[in-house]
Amino acid sequence: MKKALITGIRGQDGAYLAKLLLEQGYQVYGADRRSSDSSYWRLEKLKIKDKVKIIYMDLLEESNVYEVMRTYKFDEIYNLAAQSFVQVSFNQPLLTANVNSMGTLRILEAIRLFSRDTKFYQASTSELYGKVQEIPQRETTPFYPRSPYAVSKLFAHWITVNYREAYGMFNVCGILFNHESPLRSIEFITKKVVNGVCKIKLGLVDKIEVGNIEAKRDWGYAPEYVYGMYLMMNHPNPDDFVLATGEIHSVKELIEKAFSLVDIYISWQDKDGKIIGVDQQGKIRVQTNQEYYRPSEVDILVGDYSKAKQILGWEPKVKFDKLIEIMVEEEMKELKEKK
Ligand code: NAP
Ligand code: GDD
Image (cartoon, rainbow, N blue to C red; front, side, top):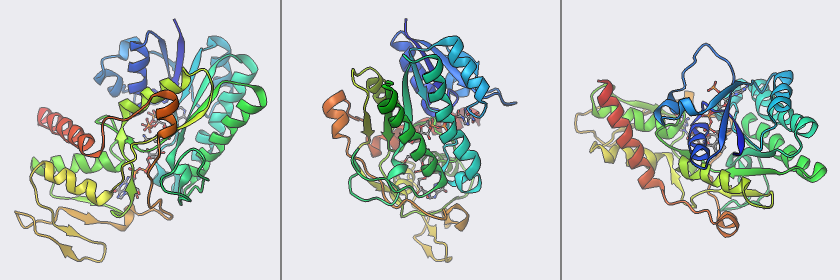
């Protein structure tokens, strides 16, 4: 039985990956930083909480990381833990760098010193492409990070590659484009919009407030992306892969799609106060708020996943329309149950 450690077990990807690895017959350990909120709601929702062994490991605490590696000697480690919210990284750049960059290096050093045969997956990101140098972005596209988050992930990406080349370690980087699901945290735009739209439909709130609606992303479905992580780790050669859908949509399209699914016309108010469109009940449903703009934005991301398709046989089935349908349906169900 293979023994895998997932850091960031309480996050969206951690939960889906744990489920997948359990189904594949792994013994799954989840690294959790201790906090007063001991909720494992995602693992509970997927009905796997009792099957995952929780280990306390904070990426900020070097001795903690070393001790865990020395004790368990895992077959595989999936490093998903991160300060993952781009906007927060502008307010907490040092914390972001410490967790995302140095946290990754702490694990790599621990593997190098105590558990050389452990395979390592690093959660790299399409944010590395930032101010894009090529459309679509692929593994060979130069990076141009645009936030402290992206810069921190750039270090983590290259140190993972470096340890592979310098020490012959089995290290892979998954350069994943945005992937979403009903388990997404509410601060990210897909979940925020879907939650707001469903609440408007149920009469719980009047409107949603958002930032830059012109930004464009390549949104995929998280359970399919964690399968890609598993394929990368189980391929004979360690390498780096882009996972994406190849489809591009703006935040504006995301909002329009979500409202259309609950049959509400939208009226918008832009950041200069101008009103566009009329809602059936004469209400403003979407308001643009400067608060949600970023000091430097990533305008467009769209990935070319042909390397993953060719070498791993990975291909996404759920594209934008289906993704938003899944999220709206699940959100509506949950809100009605709570009501
Ligand atoms: P997420 O939901 O934000 O989960 C991140 C997890 O990291 C959380 O469970 C968090 O713990 C944990 N964490 C934060 N600081 C930690 C620390 N100091 N020590 C230990 N754990 C810590 O992120 P996700 O969406 O699942 O993404 C997984 C990974 O993929 C992240 O590294 C993210 O940057 C990267 N990524 C995500 C996407 C995407 O679209 N989802 C795309 C590309 C790359 P708490 O629960 O205690 O807060
Ligand atoms: N969160 C948020 N909230 N984003 C908004 C809002 C808002 O109210 N209004 C507009 N946006 C825009 C952001 O400016 C950004 O251009 C886009 O919507 C997507 O924002 P997020 O959903 O926060 O995701 P992200 O692309 O910044 O980062 C996510 O994907 C990365 C991969 O590309 C995160 O999961 C990162 O951890 C991940 O690396």
